[in-house]
Image (cartoon, rainbow, N blue to C red):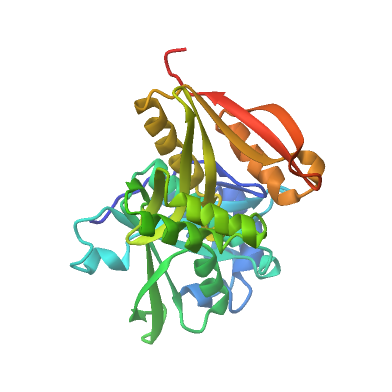
Length: 340
């Protein structure tokens, strides 16, 4: 299903970037990267030979309203673009009933290898699923573009097929690789073996958080016995969470994990919302999580605590001896009763 997208009033933000509509005043910044041989060619268009080429492209972007400028927060400069276009999947009978757009992007050569493009693509994916409610997003790269392939892999797309792409500026065709990512859906998993399989598959991708083998095996085995919710894109489990009920009105998020390539897409919140909804249906009022206290000095857990704070949890108590002195436990709680 072909979608008409209007991004003319859209502004998105990441840690290092602002994604915003193009302006005529961006011509010097765009020309600086678009005139470099090889940059545009990797995306299927010829590098710009003059400022007039750049002006025409910016005018096209402003008229078509489906492309955003990538602006580096540190300098305010435009260093690339990202847009939503018609997808190869719109012509595939397997996907014609779905609302799908294709993400296309280009980045200044001087900023390759810094993780900026995966950051922008993940933010655009989140926008597509949360705001536009698309069923799926697609992406592709030419076979001779390993940089784009790495971006796609880091963002968790699934490879579908190879096809030929007709270049617009010559009569040549190039081979391209085509990928898809379906909008993740959250559901409860009832089979104990499937629960354990999902828990192990996800936790093994997160050694910075689950690097103690004995503890990880314990999480996997106990996941068999408790309610487990998982996020699926197609048949692939992207993340999961397990609820352990202690008393009639209280429970905890016993363990939760999301494959690293899907961080930054808003999926953790989707998973947490499903578990809170389940808790409310069971009459649970108070929900807690246990994580490492800031005094442990692990940067990855700074992000974990920030996530829980963003979901409404508040610190209650630090118990240094609960696990061991090197891993002080922080207990965070939240009242999930909507009637309060």
